[in-house]
Length: 184
Image (cartoon, rainbow, N blue to C red; front, side, top):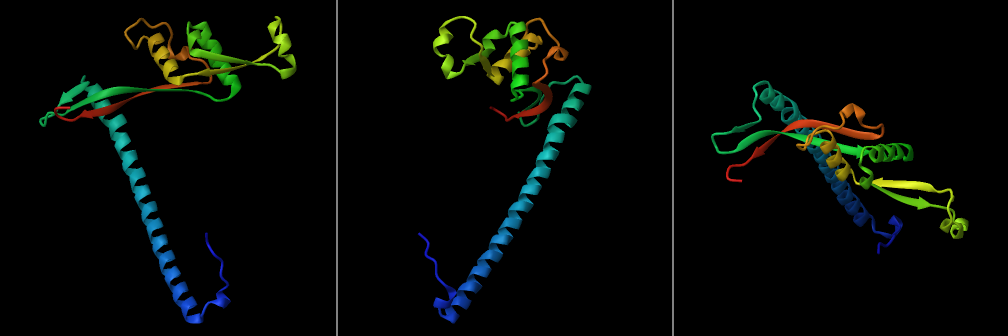
């Protein structure tokens, strides 16, 4: 626990020495904060440069020359891989739209539903015709795998195109480089 002291209770020479010491530590803290900010900015720039090379420059160069893999002199292997990202918007309308689309395209097993009704209607829930609200959840990794299959990117024939994907579903692909170390 910290204790509070009034500066009037501390001898002047101790107060001056303590304040000088604290100011020195604060100056050091600011210097370290600046160093972290400078290093963070350098990391951000280095990451952006790496991403540009890894996701644009080299994949385009490989594709223009009909390459998908290259074995280097040191035994490492450099290859172009396609990365797929998929996410479902969090708002209820978009989630319902994606759930409806999945059900219409043989992906109903990917939609997990939960029905909610007012507690005053619990007894009536056993009877038909109860109005309820549906809340859905979907595993985005399972949806991504399903979409890759539907798009014909897993060896099966394409059933849909990217233009067929529903509103509320973010699905994008990009190429990037992968370097496999020798003997890995």
